[in-house]
Image (tube, rainbow, N blue to C red; front, top):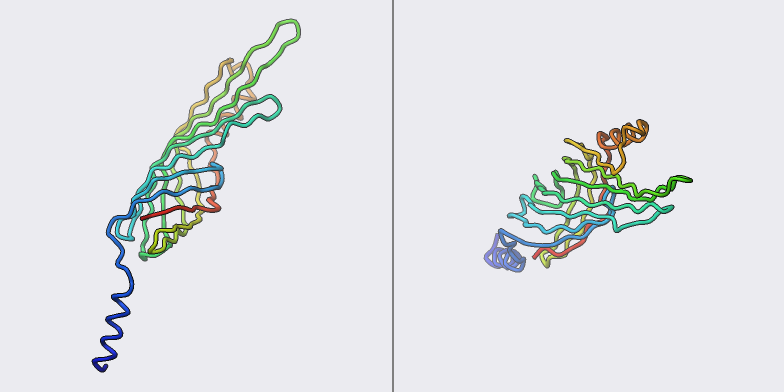
Length: 187
């Protein structure tokens, strides 16, 4: 290699900005089972990302039933090849709630509140591309595994064994997860 070729190679390496060892950022996403998510994260030397995620579904009314969903989770992504590909895991708590008014002819009405709270672990695999300028885009898929769950009700569920069985089954079910789009800034 001649001196001028060596100088050209050195200039090419110098032209690429060097990535800082710690980058902080925020991501927003859409997916399933949490339709909307916001995450604050720290990216460590392009090897791992550590973050905190809040997922939610805005209150929704369907046939006089008001529903809500939220979750809070710690997030870890490991990038084995120092690129966009990652293996990750979310560990957190999720709440699903429903409220309605039940009317019994001649007896009046009562408000029923039903809640399902669960702790979960969500291993996943995906891609999170981050440019040198900080724009981040990603997607991932995984499986949400319940660690424990509890059902609360303002009316005794023991009076409704079928409802109790369905709520227990939902709380013990593994469900697929999919983040269709993550977008944000990581500076």
